[in-house]
Image (cartoon, rainbow, N blue to C red; front, side, top):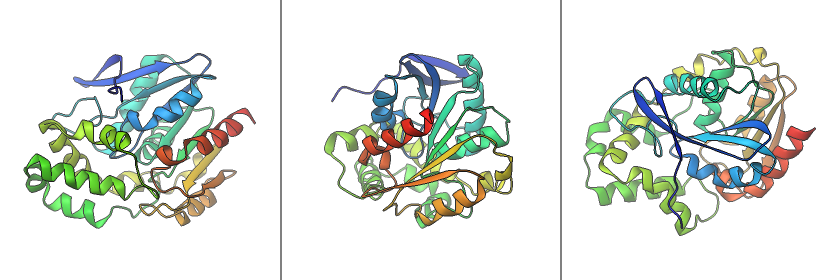
Length: 272
């Protein structure tokens, strides 16, 4: 498999963010989640760039972007997204966010007042409380985890990401997910982004879903064990006029497991 690469650099608060642009047409922005990167959006990119101009990037602390010992929390990612949209000089783009990417999109829309044409959320982290026992354990022991031998670290990450899928992930997909976290800086960054995860970042917009005035599509892996589909129904009830579609035989990593079904629903929603 060809190594994943992003062509362009953007300087945000003295930190380098990598991004890329593909296709022609109406602007569409993709935002990945954790512990993923833009690599995991590749199927959506390929399917959407035929009809839209697709902008995608790696969040701070993820993928090919800056992994220095600094803020990689959800509190900075929406500001990064806002700065990138301004840098790209696009107005009212379509936007798709998966997992923490969904959180970032919601924070940018509600807190930064960024205007979008339509919003698509895929298994988003949107309702408090959230955070697994694994997250809580790392928060208390970040330095210990960051210092384990690399082979143990890779085994931890591999075992962890497998639980996000309903089915079995193929070898090339697993390797692509592991790649950004495999270096010394990547290992430290993996535990840093988990340690900095906090429900306060969703609490900040928890009571403001009524402010959403654009069409919203919520897509959810029916077999998601990280965030159960019941949360999808709860979120739909809070966003007036939103539509929820459950994707069968898919877990939290539905973007890898059922990209064709996602694309079908996304294109229909955009074109309606």
